[in-house]
Image (cartoon, rainbow, N blue to C red):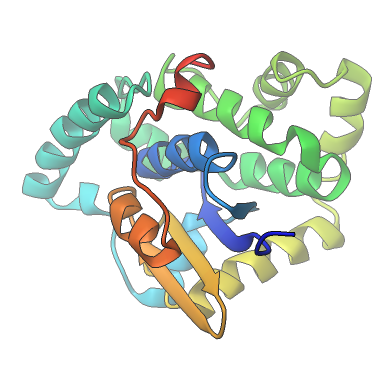
Length: 226
């Protein structure tokens, strides 16, 4: 019997394009590296408030850099990111609270679908410039991910329950305890050490910490799935 898989926690919010980039790379490596990837839906607004941080898009120079950076990284990592036309309205007015509560319910009830539903929500907002706040939008993402319409409606009805609200808050608080000041955050549990890595561009460092081989953002084993 070989060594047990090391646990990786990915804290993410579908409102964060950098979270999508980290998510896709880690999903490509989860069956290549000896790891157990745990997806942790988190509310980025809660992390920003708790840490006192501000979204980079609030600073004009950072906003301009971010738009170009996300576009280039999407090309490099082969993730189909296209910024929404009304970027600020999507980020600061619409937000992601209902979407992240829905993903919290999915994790509780159908963890096997969490990866697919998360990806469909990112595809809507960050690739096709579609809504992720209205019930029909969330249902459409869930159905495209393979969930039946009836089951998706049942889960959507639970997004305002205390259980779901508390679970999302607990996950967000856990990220804050690790030291998060934004998303994505990857937490690697290695023997007696825990490492918190911020951003989508720490994968080579993560490979080093794990003692695994970095094969680039699109490893050969993942090519067939693109």
